[in-house]
Length: 309
Ligand code: CP
Ligand code: NVA
Image (tube, rainbow, N blue to C red; front, side, top):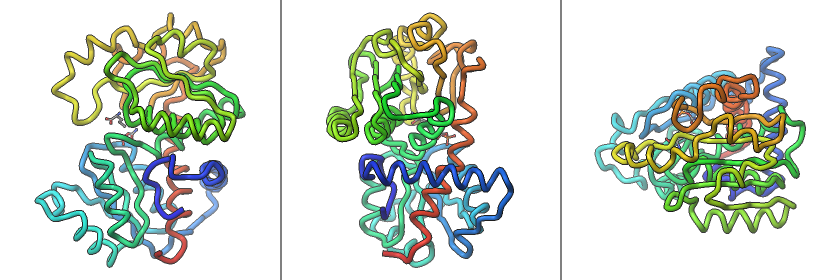
């Protein structure tokens, strides 16, 4: 494992190893046992989109691992003024031990990994959000006690978060059932790859336009904003299209009686879910947010402990 660009790049064993390592680091963190695995190492964090959780959890995580996190706003560095990804990757590789990047194009993240010689971590692109899926599956494991054979239903936009969850569920041998409105479905090739990966782990990927069908018998129900970063001009149209996909008490009643609710946050009450769902005792959204810290520390320590490639 040299980078974390998308979940489907990992083997099922690597994926499960990261979840296991995350639990160990979480325990050490709770017990206040120092774990300076990245002492003397520097992580550059390039942000080309807004963030609360990703920025704060990566920054805190590097600090807890004894390393140094460097925030790099894309609008402040020369990348934002047109310096090439090739030159940026080569220059940053001379200073840093790793790069976390949040940006629009997945290809920019992949290019950064190819052109540089230090580990690259995808902190969200238009297509993928791998750190989120790791945190989400750890949260499901903690709440439900198992992953294999459990059913996660995702209702809403077929976006970056949905893609990484499909890939993660495939690696973990879970059933991933996704319901999107027509025209807002997940990327077909990502779903095909996830179906292939699921066939090797005993998992299953189901795709529908019917939210009730997706949610039926689910152990966890997940939704995300209907308007992702960069789609602000489509807001009105999206709200109209997605309203039948709102996660509310009625939709929730089709899931298992002890099903949990998940959301990557930021959330918009009254839109993708009602307040009585996200603010209920069966909502695990803040556990998910916390687990971003622990899984990312596992990713950082796994990728950055060794010598550069
Ligand atoms: N879930 C998530 O990635 O949140 P931020 O956009 O706040 O980083
Ligand atoms: N789908 C959302 C996730 C935010 C963490 C977006 O891309 O804006």
